[in-house]
Image 1 (tube, rainbow, N blue to C red):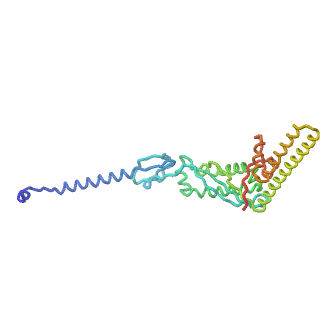
Image 2: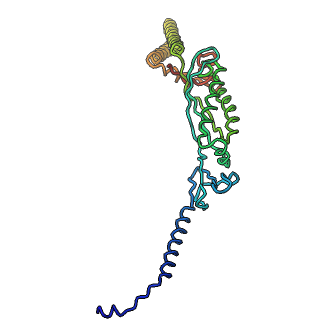
Image 3: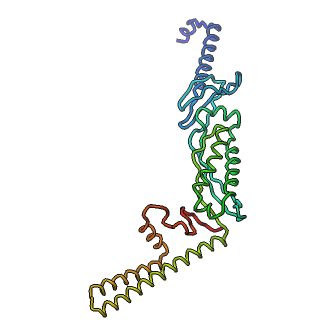
Length: 288
């Protein structure tokens, strides 16, 4: 058996082996290059190509979400186009010299088709532009109003003024301003206590008025009883009881006042009234 194997001629051509190895190496390189040439742009993103051996950042063409084939030595840079939000807390002096703290949410997004220009002009740290411009607009606008206007009557006007400033500034840097919202307003403790005191006194006044109505109906009931009109007596007594219960509700639960305001509101103006300390707007009130 061994003699048979020794008789089989083995012909190994070094040239053929070298050729096969070269083909294998080239094939492997081709596969790796092909795999490296496919670049993904995730949903909500926009991409552009950076050519290190060419003209650098390609401004004219952007790539939407999906998989794209590019040369492996080039780089696909992506930016998110989704709406993003950042909240700023600033302590600002109002026009009367009172320090108030406001919490403002700024919602923004990168302009579609402009990510390459944003990358060249500002870079990936463009959030610093948003920070600087937003904080500047907050201080500039809030300083033109007093604290009562900030937390109640002029809230919409404040948001509109800040929006106008930031839209103009953001547009220069290829950023969209989606919207601005004043989330919270903190007042100095002494001012907040004064407002709470006014509201407490108002509740007491309402309770006193309800008590006065109760006494009037009871007085009318006694008069009608003396006249002998039983139906009017019963009506007056029930009205007096209803007023008494309402006065008790006001004393036990201040929120009951809010319910009565909204029940009587006709949809015009504000349920709080124009001369109320809260004005015609909705207020958010906290003390430091």
